[in-house]
Amino acid sequence: MHPAPSVIVFTTLSGLGFGLLFWLGLGLPAVTGWTAFAFFAIAYLLAVGGLMASTFHLGRPERALKAFTQWRSSWLSREGWASVATLLVMALFGAGLVFAGASWQPLGLLGAALALATVFATSMIYAQLRTVPRWKTPLTPALYLSISLAGGALLAGQVAMALVLLPVAAVMQVLWWARGDRALSESGTNLATATGLGSIGAVRAFEPPHTGTNYLLREFVHEVGRKHAQKLRLLSLVLGYALPVVLLLLPFTHLFALVAVLSHLAGVAASRWLFFAEAEHVVGLYYGKRAA
Image (cartoon, rainbow, N blue to C red):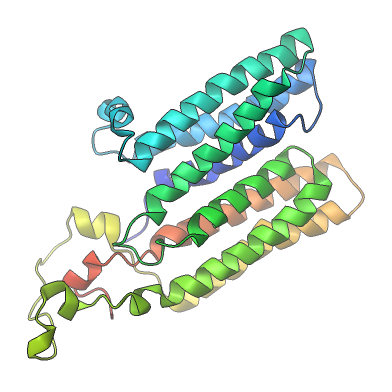
């Protein structure tokens, strides 16, 4: 089983797009006219493209608008509202830069705050889930925000900030993996606690509940070998963080800048794939797919 590509595309592209919108909202880089248009076009293509990709993962994409009605209890709904608010506010701010050569900074600061709120809401969709111990940690929103800010700085051409934020994001990623590898076992969740039969002895599944696959197995039970996971983690660190930093330290060329961005994008996509592939949803215990 493998994670849905639409979710990987969504979390990778939207995080980068909203990260770029954050820096643009701060006035970094200080651009106007067609240069500003180019930066905003890239940011919107990434952010909107990522959001559109997420709808393909819904069971009934035509009902996506109904998600906006649950903002009191759903982080998915809050993400939707925050993303729409960000895009509208930043559209006004960008229009001032492109057509009037004016920086309406209060709008920019509001848009920057909303961009961060969107990334935070996205992360909380996962960080709130007790059923996935690997995700349920404050490190999840910290990871999402650090990657978004680092990638946004890279796209915005903020070399000094990127040189600081890329290593910070790499450290957050390593900390998240280290904590996540222990999360399921330390959660105390196993067949005995799930069935409530632990008091009468060791609990094991007599036979699998299904002879074939189903929705739960497709969506929540992914299996990836430890050897392959370690290789992908190394690839993620090298492409996502190390190589971009090296390229930023070299004398600037547009080619190096492009390769740094593409490398970072590939590295983050690999880490996002692992984010879902290694999720260890506790429903896997029911199907005999978890050792805990």
